[in-house]
Image 1: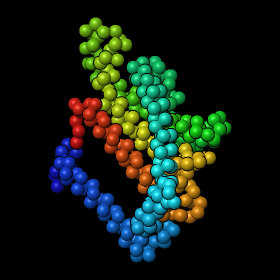
Image 2: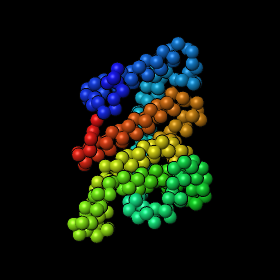
Image 3: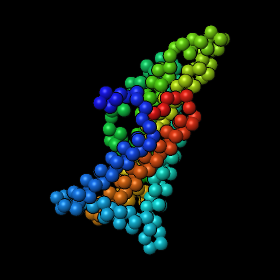
Image 4: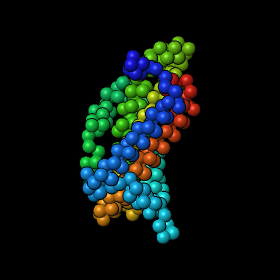
Length: 265
């Protein structure tokens, strides 16, 4: 039991995988038991086999794949917003972390949005940008960048001052100290911030596609809800969760390859 409460104890990959698979199987068994027992209405909780059938229908029906097309549109919107988040959010976060005066000016304008309901901005974005693709990308961008910027700033400020002082002693200018010493040491934590930003965007994808989306996973779920096809609703939600998990795991893999010196569990 003493080893159970030890966050520094390494866990073998095989054992971690087995525990994860066991948890998923347990949830599926519980879901099947609840659905098969009749204790919960199918309207409230479709059976796993019904969701699987709905997934098959959405994946291929009458010569087309609604699910594949919807996934492409959602991934495309998220990718465009993600590029903007990285190109705009990371430089702002770095400059805020490197310049205390600039941080004092911008922090009151950015930090409160981490706790604010970003969904409330949707009507404003519709008024400013209309109901086209620009609004959807802008909503995803805003929802993620307000998390990314403070995390990048905190990553810069978390680098020990000794790295800045050491570079300064070697004759580097203050800006070179930031770009050549501080930023490289902060990159693993900045990568974590990017991963969080993409995860946040996946949580907002259904909201972004709620308004006038011709196609997309959010639109697919909304259409299924209108017709009370709850098995399709569950199938769409599971696809979004799976895509978010693949994105998370893929970006974590890339981080491990880029920054191998970071301790990995």
